[in-house]
Length: 320
Image (cartoon, rainbow, N blue to C red; front, top):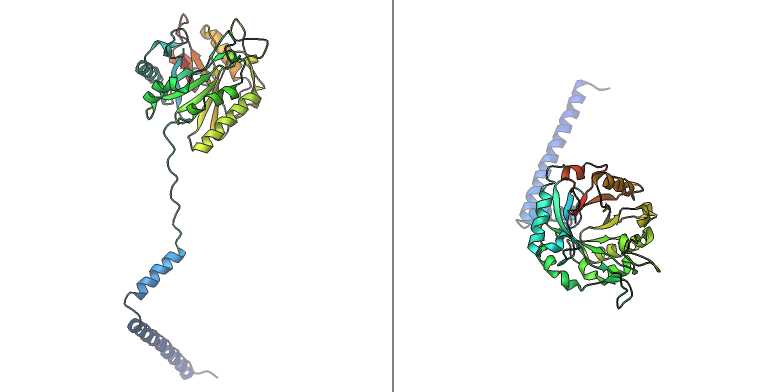
């Protein structure tokens, strides 16, 4: 039977026990404080912190300057250095070409995406004669392009090197120019108009062709260089103005490191150019964007507003 006194005794006993626990704890702490070195508890806390804290990994180094940026529109000029017949770039000095590219790019500043200037330089020039190597293409030492490379390194200007392989293949010719692809701000363009198989030769009304498999092999080659050298993402620009210039086009595929642009480079009135553009858009590879070429030799060069006013708007605009 429980009475008030029993309950009270239990309460007092419990309180006394609790009090003893507090006193015992204080005494233990006091003895530890006397026995242990003065900084032992601090060291213990620091060690505990180290045991449970995981430092975040160091951030990866930033990529080199240059590289493909999906948020911008590229605007620039096309040609071969020193040749007034192959585009406006060859009519200008190195610095003059850079200034012209920047001036043209500035005209696109009001169209949603910030413009980035570029130089599209013909690296190999297709020829009507076989030449010493029999490939109907004139190749040049990469040092020939050093003035343009030196003037654009570390600037806002990108560079695209255009391949016209004649009877060679894009992959074979891309390998010949490999040092160019080591540059962070350098991209590649493939021009099937000037790629032919025997018995045809470039020019003379002949329009060449390339299959998606060859384009993909060239993309894979460029991708391997980017991965091996830690380079930023690059573009591969494939020119087109007739359906036959690219066979199996929907099967062209970019990679994590290589973005594909299919560029309409047809000549003629704005109406004709838009017809060519619709053929370029037809069967566009997954993930690819589109380009457009304007010619200063036309009776009237389309304005930036007319150039952008296409569906989809071109993200790469070149002037020849």
